[in-house]
Length: 352
Image (cartoon, rainbow, N blue to C red):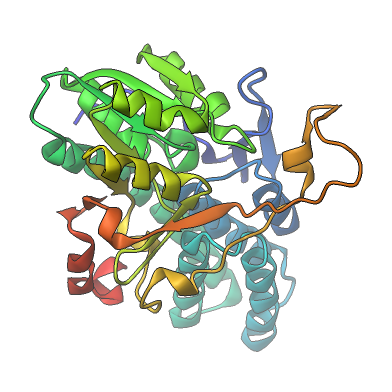
């Protein structure tokens, strides 16, 4: 398959990790060089790098950077220190399961490696690079599998998406936007409708930026315009990403996804979740147990230097909500598209 997108938010380069600073887009394209695990943790926490798959890739490199900083030849001392690195990285974003999946995979590789501490460090770097490459291939497969389940008519579709589940949120190509890219490549896409996605505006800033880079027609709407647009017949399918999916198919994604799914259901519009199997947390039976990150209130009351609300108001800022499985038409993965209830057929062993 030909890859059309050249946006790679996480790259190993010159013995360090290069991150696209997503907090500066779309007005400024800047790259941050990460040399230390502590800086990687900060980059994940402050959303310089964001999106569940991209966070997983960044955390894998963060584990290697942390391992590289450990100055001992004693395996037990090394593993004790590596556990502290893992705990630091794991504390950054509680909802994105890819973060914990990547850390766990790196730890397993480290413990299974026979040899010196230096041997372990080399294997950790190689594993992080493998995770990076695998995610890119996974997203391309998700894109093509999504293309197979999109509505047959009209020939050119308008796809509605929420937040940013594109190249910037992955190793490249994207999950929800991977489906968009595959549809665009095959002449099946008329236009993308991108929710602005309050309060951090990832749709307006990031999804729109990615589409503009590639010449994909994109219309930005506010989050509360979805029902009106669907009633007008402007939307043929909704495709979103996910930060964690429970075993029954309940899916946590950026706040506002649940209401979008309800509106799509009311208008008989198919609602798809696009995510790698590494996003499925088989240890959670349903979405009620998914931890929901609550972020700083300033994301609501302030834009830039402008204060939007009166002094004395209180705020509630959950970063995610959970869409029940019954509202999801299919979950699109690298292994195909499945009804939410069919996820149970996959085991964690098959995922790794």
